[in-house]
Length: 66
Length: 553
Image (tube, rainbow over all chains, first blue to last red; front, side, top):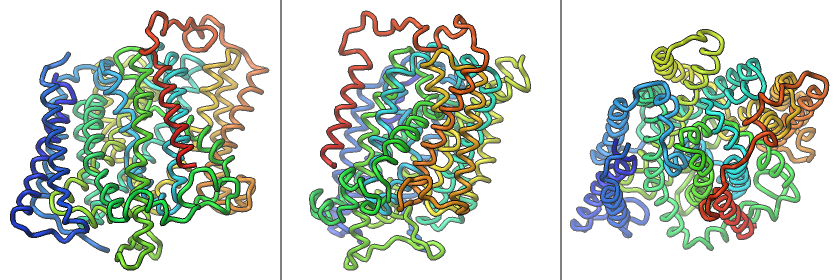
C-alpha cells in the first residue's frame, strides 16, 4: 500500500498546478479578477506553495509500505 | 439569498476532489479484508497518521463554519474551545488513559465499560453514543448543504443527499481505513484551502495588531474580562469556562467520545496510540489561526459600512455561519473559490465520515453483537458494518432537518455533548482510577447524569426555570447555560456513582487488572529514552498552551 502522504502529494500537486496556472494566465493577460486584494495575485504564490508541497510529499513517499 | 457562479476551473477542482476520495476508497477496498481492517484500520497506523486523523475527525462543520460564526458572535472567547477546552483533555488521554484503553485491545469505548463494569453499562453507553452520533452527523449534513446552497444555489435537500451519498460510498468500501486516509487528505486541504482567507483578511485590515485594535475589548481577550459575565461577548464567567468547558465538556469529549478515540485505537502500538492525541494537540492549537482570525476579520468588515460586507439574513436572523463562506467569496478569485469550497466540503466530510465510522463500530460490536447475534462470524460483522454505514447516513439525514431549527450550530452541539459525554467522563474517571467503583454504581450514575442533563436542557429551553439557576450569574447566554449544565450533570453522575458503589457488590480485583490504575503494572515507559516518552511531548504541548493563554490574556 502506498503511504497516505503519497496521496496527499498527488492532490496538492494537481490542485496547486491548476491554481498556479490560472494565476499565471491572469498575470500575463494583465487583467485582474474582481475580488478584494486581487492585485496581490494570491493564486500565483499560493498555487506555487501548494505545487512545491505536493512535489515534496511525492518525492519523500514513493515507496510502498506494509 | 446570494449565489456565486462557479467557473469551469472551480467545478473541475471540486470534481477532482470528489473523484479522488472515491478513488481512494476504491483503492483501499482491496486492503480491507476482515473486520479488524474495516473497524480498526488493521491497527497499523503510525502516531502521525492516527494523530492527524484524530484531529481531522473533529475538524468538521463545527470547527469551520460554526467556530468562525461564533467568533463573530462571541469574540475571541471561542478560542477557549481550542485551548483550555481541548488541550489538557487531549494530553490527559494520551498520558494517563490510553494505556488502559489500548492495552485491553477493545474495539470501542463501550467495550471498555463492558470489561470494567458489565454488559448493561456498555449497552447503555453504546445506545446513547449511537443516538448522539447520528444527531451530530445531522449537523454535518446541515452545514454541508448550507455551503452548497449558499455558494452554488443548489437545492438544500439535493445537495445534502449528494454529500451524504459520497461519504456513504467511500466509508462503505473500506471503513475506518478510508475514513482515516480521507481525513488526512482533508486536513491538508483545509489548511491550504482556508488559511489564505485569514492571511488576506489580515492584510486587508492592516496587520494582526490592527485586527485586535479594531474589535472591542470584550471580543479580543481570553481571560481579562471573564470576572464579570456582562463584560465579555459570551456572557460567561471564568468558572463556567474552567469547570464546564475546560473540565467536563472537554474531557468528556476528548477522552471518551469514540469518534476521536477510535483513531488512537488504530495505532500500531501503545506508544503510537499515546502519541496520537499529543501530536493532535499541537495542530489543534493552530486551528484558531484560521477560524478565530477569520471571525474577527468578518466582525470588523461587517461593522465598517464602507466595506460592503454583511452576513446573510436567514428568516430575519443573522446567519453567523455564513461568515467564512462570505470571506471566501470576498477574497478568492476563480480557482481559489473552487479550492475554498473543496476545503469546506472536505471539513464536513471528515466529520461525517468520522461519525459514521464510529457509529458502525459501536452498533456492530456494542449493540448488534452484544444483544442480537452473539455468535456472529467475522464475515457477518464485516457485512453488518457496511450495512450500518448506509443506514447511519440515512438516519443522520433526518436529523439534519432538526438541526436547522437551532440558531447556532455550536449551541446545538454543546447541548448534545452534555447529555452523553459529560456524565460518561465521570464514569470513566472513576472506573479507571478508583478500584472500588461497582458496576451498579456506574450504571445508575450514568442514568442519573444523563437524565438530569436532559431535564436541565428541557428546563432551560422551555424556560421552566431561570437560566441563572444553572450559571450562578445574572447573565446567562445559551452557551453559558450549556457549559454549566455539563458541569452539574457530571457532578450528579460522579456523586451518584460513588454513593451507590459504597453499598453494592464490587468486582473481583483480579478481573480489573489492566483496566484500573493501581492494579496494573505501568511499564510502558520503562527503558524508553526521555525524549521519546509521550509525557515529554505532552509537557511541550502544555507549555505552548500556557504561553498562548498569557499572550492573549
